[in-house]
Amino acid sequence: MRKRISCFLLCLVMTQLGCNRAKELNPQSDNVPKKAFQAVKKQFPESTSLVFAPLTPEKIWSVDFESNARQYKAVVDTQAVLANARFLSNQLPGPLAQFLDKLAIRGGTIASETWEIQPDPVAGEDWPRVAFDYQWKGMERTIKVITNGANNVKFALNMGTQSSLAYYVDKPVDVSPKIGSYLKRMGLVEPSGMWVSYARDGRRTFINKNGTYIFDQNENPVYVLHGSVIKQEDLPAFVFNYINASPEMDGFVFETAIRFSAEGSSGYQISIRKDTEIGQIFYLYFNDNGDLIYHDYTAYQF
Image 1: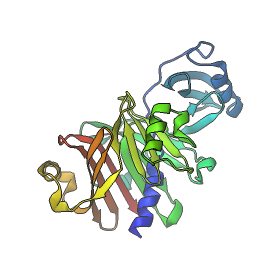
Image 2: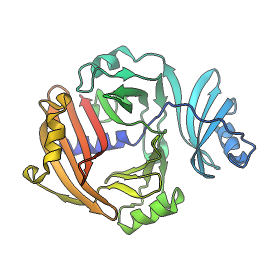
Image 3: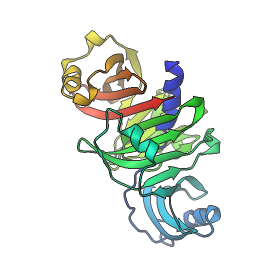
Image 4: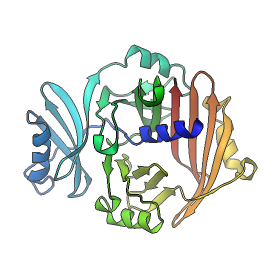
């Protein structure tokens, strides 16, 4: 059961949404080819007030726009809209607000409107996600929630780094030759493709069913799940110091630890969990210097 839930929540984390405004670019300029503009118009013929921002230079852009009196966000290349989300509400639905108030991450500030991320049939999705930005412990985060989704889950929530709307690619090398070649060299690319998202600090995250792979703004690996399981007692002291200094993790128990090591990337990935009427899991990623390089949280209720 835990393995099945973990796979389901991994699918959930694949779609991120950052609600920061984009920098306006001229669709007729070299920065935004006419084909990218036309790709939006093809799927949303009534779209107006398009505001573009580059994600991958000369290849992929985020875009904010209006269509039929609704606000939208999307990711687009020169061929098609790769992902999109529509404005849902200025407030969280009541049941979702009540669920959030029961979690270890309660007490933060909802920092944006609520958006509905549309499912991507190409990636095998058939349910939308509610998404909003969330300020928690001084960190800018994004929360995504599936309500009444697959596997009879009433709520499935993920909180991760604030980032762009994620999109699905068959070949990571098409997004970045450097990253794609690295993943292929490490044997981490599968025919099923990967999800890609961009954080505000320039990091890129690639995700498939095997795990998460994070690269810095220069496309060098920060975290690659390529290593071996280790015992709790073999973890360095800085891991326990961090957990003990985090009151929101009170009552959580150790689940797994992995020592990861690959070209230019080494450290520890730890998961701790708490199972009551709501299942909750923190995923912590440290480099060898004891710096927390990534932080993820999931919760689910049947």
